[in-house]
Length: 207
Image 1 (cartoon, rainbow, N blue to C red):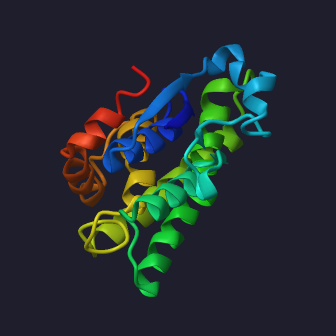
Image 2: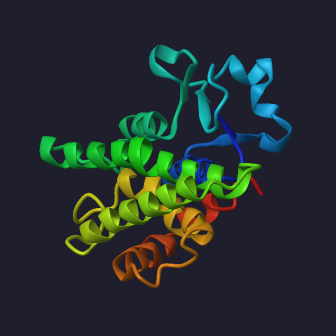
Image 3: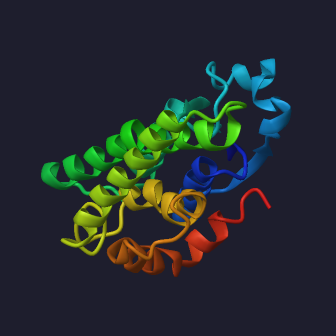
């Protein structure tokens, strides 16, 4: 059994999609982020930085529980454990790991900054808003160029690179820029991924 510590956010959906895809039994621990439930001691014992998503695999290596936090590490762990959605050849794995890093280190922070300065900040700073809007546009253009060359993000097969990126296209983009009209290849790919039953189920967790 796996405990999924999550919330109804783009990041949270990435792990629930993966768990649905591999068919592992899991139970959901839902956090109200607006009430800072993620900073309570019991969650900090799972993830010391207090961010969702995180998992605790009670059937971990050597039969002992293992906690994993962060979308890229969790997806990689579940892919390795299940033997699914991660290529076995070095070239294919490297392409997948590149995109995991791009989403976690480049695209995710761009959208976090965009949200902070457009929505959260009490004082709207035009320079900061313009900076992060343009950065998000540049990140989307990077994904668009890649998907113009391949059916899925890391090549011709569906992988955890697609799972970590999909909520960007259907959640984050709704906030900015609002739609995928200028990104037809992302729209094509998002439609393809969104037809998967496990993706549809995972996007409803927590319900």
